[in-house]
Length: 133
Image (cartoon, rainbow, N blue to C red; front, side):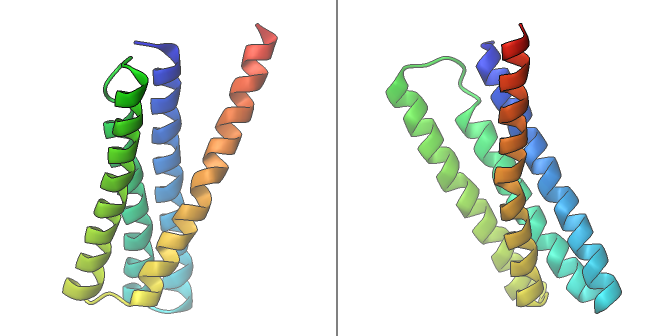
């Protein structure tokens, strides 16, 4: 396996875990400030983002070394899968489970804000390690 693919998989796993951690934090705050349904909604929104991130990474980074057009199509398909998973989880949370929509969307937004921060920290750490070698 290529080293860059392994780094990408680790970074995607780290981003999904940070999104889940943000969801737990949002659920704790919502639970303390309001009630358990708000907390469940906040966590579900963040979990939707984490599930989408994981699905995108599995599809986009799962094919190994391939030609550029195949890689591009896998990345495009991964992004489509991400938003499809997010949409399905949001629909289930709001329409079927009757969780508060504002809490669900707040959890999703918080998790999506954490996503680029995870990548910035991971990318800067990679540059430092490569510069040391």
